[in-house]
Image (tube, rainbow, N blue to C red):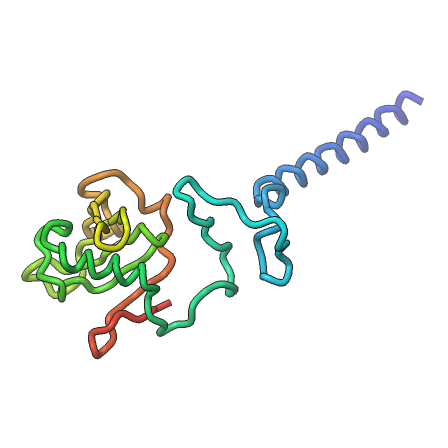
Length: 186
């Protein structure tokens, strides 16, 4: 009889360990934190709108194909205003930039947060990236640089400011087309 009791405890411990492992995986992949607002529009609850972040903007959409603009699309009106503001003030925001033509790629992390990849004067390749935050609206739109990165052998290296590259993912890429207009590249 003592052998049977030990055998039952072993089965119980095995089941307990498996249950804990499944719970840890469930929590680790974030299934317990998902809201009904994530996912395709046909599954969203119209009576329960999504939450807003501290700036009053809706949260970024979950990764996937829904809610994305097509490749080759133009930036939104506000994104275009931010791009124009950065180009206009390129000399003050981007150290040693070779004019607005030196700005090669623009990655939006959100409507007001943008990464600007550019060439320095005398360089033929992109070797700098700045993280710019826009504030205000319309004629009062202002931009400030929060971080400056330089290209190294291992990727982008922080040169000035606070590290944001890993906390603010790059989402919407815009590049200049042959006619000089900004078009969506991803």
